[in-house]
Image (cartoon, rainbow, N blue to C red):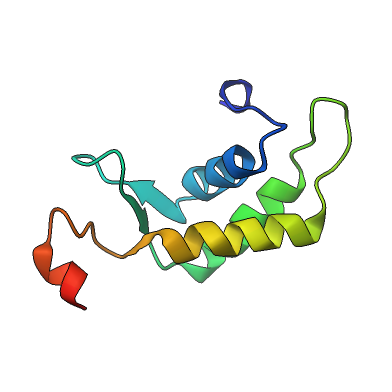
Length: 92
């Protein structure tokens, strides 16, 4: 699976780490909606996984940049439910 991501794209690296650790999931009905599962252990694991992904030139990602991007993606994700599938989720 790692071959499917562009390791020089910070957004893609963090998205890969979040999805493969099950910290986030794409709604099966709305591929434009990412849902935050709310599992703290999975989110911590995602950060550790992202830290181990190196760029194509062999350099590591800056840890602060990874943390910031992880926080941005988790903050942008829907909380627990897809708001398009469950209109009540968007009112919470």
